[in-house]
Image 1 (cartoon, rainbow, N blue to C red):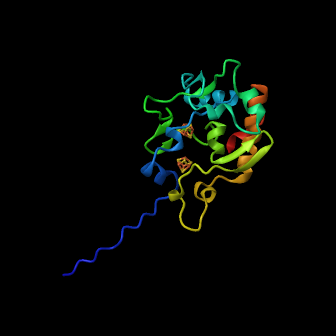
Image 2: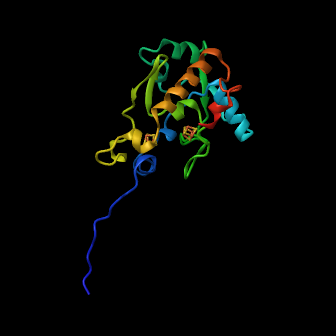
Image 3: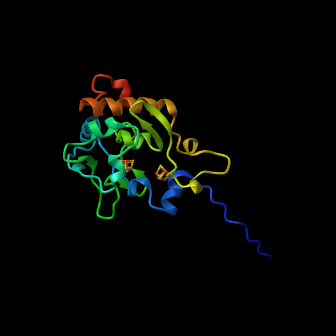
Length: 179
Ligand code: SF4
Ligand code: SF4
């Protein structure tokens, strides 16, 4: 009897593959939480201990080029901002072995929008921080992650409305909660 060794074909792509090969965005990012994020997550989890006002360890968060109101609306005068807490190893406290434990309509708007890039004026591109290896040949990261542009535009509007007003923006618009 002969034995044929077949090549190992890896059909895993996207965030699952990312978690196998590197530290993911959920293990390294310092996630800003808007007023609406804090309310939605508190309603869903029954917790209020998931965020705190902190000065970002990475100074790049405080200096997004070409988006002055990100700093003006998102930060306090002392340089801190409302941020998701992380475990000692840097993982987000909502990260589980199977990914984020928050449903999409509760997840922080910054997380929902990733990996799109944006300013106050709109979505303007895609971050290059997702590893290239997580995308199958001939495809692109937005397809793989299934983050649709129409959703991104809507979440972007919510995010900046909440940063500008300091209030939840979907309270009286329940259709915005079914995203
Ligand atoms: S969104 Fe990008 S960086 Fe984050 S886990 Fe998925 S592939 Fe990795
Ligand atoms: S809230 Fe979810 S998506 Fe956002 S960083 Fe935490 S685990 Fe990742």
